[in-house]
Image 1 (cartoon, rainbow, N blue to C red):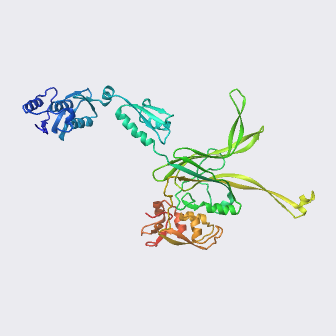
Image 2 (cartoon, one colour):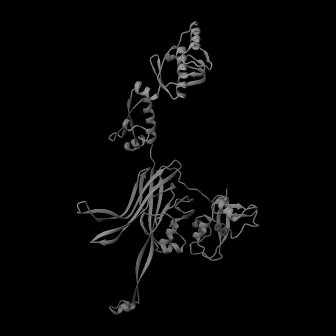
Image 3 (cartoon, one colour):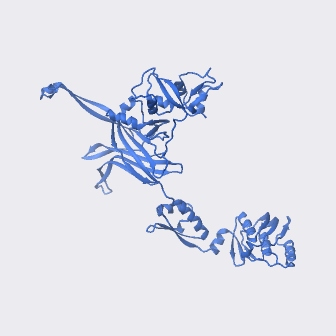
Length: 523
């Protein structure tokens, strides 16, 4: 009994076509040896062979293996071409499998016969379709079906909304692949808490403080600009406008104290990853419409502030927010019915959980009527008008929406301390300087500058005053011999004027070896 059959078959580079004499000689010699040939079932484990093919027709290679293994092989018209390969220490089926896969073919085993050919043809003629039900635990069946239809024939997928499941009718190998896709699509979705704060702010006051929340975005209607930006703050309740972080709650606190800001609403809503949430602050008003038969109909529309938010959570604790803010008001009345003025915006922004973005620039004019009078005399009927003065002033107001997403299952809130390894830089206050634009120049929160210098109000800033700026150590740059301001600014994508202003210099000549401060980290 021979436990392992070792056969070395070498066919030199010759044109075999229909003449199999070389192979037959080997087979005849083999027949003289008393060997029990293994069946297909056992050949996968027991018999190892060594095969060397050189420019042999692929069909002939399969026939050679079939003759050695005492099995039947049937090939279809898709089996063609030549093969040059060395196969050592493999079972018969392992050898067949390698030849099949490397030539883009497939095979099936029926009894003691191996069928080799095109994968699609074999599947349609010899495979049986099966039905399998996949229970969904986190996603909606229709959503999963829509995702599957991108890569799977829609006719093989059915939805059962009642049991919240997906039924698949396909071949076994396809069912296995579809099952993996369903598992990926049915992952547990993270919950997101959306915190919003809507403020009506005196814009003139913001300007006097050097703060501008109007960036550079466009909206769908004429008038004021609705804008946005993303942030990467280093403390909680921090907003970044452009590249500058700021403690917006401190600003709002100061504005509230002076009566220059009013909180319209502070709603909190909860949603899940990929589901849109809506904040609606306002009222419904009837709008007149005419149908196709010229009949008057009424449609109720929401008037006020509407904010639609769809969060999408990634694996790095960041949230992509799809924002659709809408602000509407009654602009006029016609025949007793309101005419609405609506401003809309659609935009996307990426932000870390727990951080805040602002949508600003919704500017409006507000008329304020004030009355001043002489005590007692101003209250005298008729004559009192001579001692009273009515004055109507226009005040610009800005509606600013602050949005903070928080991932519920996030164990670590994104709080990064940038106070480590910082150096104090002394800055000389110049004319027209404000804490806001100083912080912007250094790319540091103006609230940090206030805290670092024990400043209680942004107004407490004097010409010639020395401010201590907590500059991170990685912002210091050692000037090289051939450095100039223009090339340095271009290298770090900052403004030449910013470098000049921060360091109180006009040129880098003679500064080789000295340290200067840049608005960004030195590479």
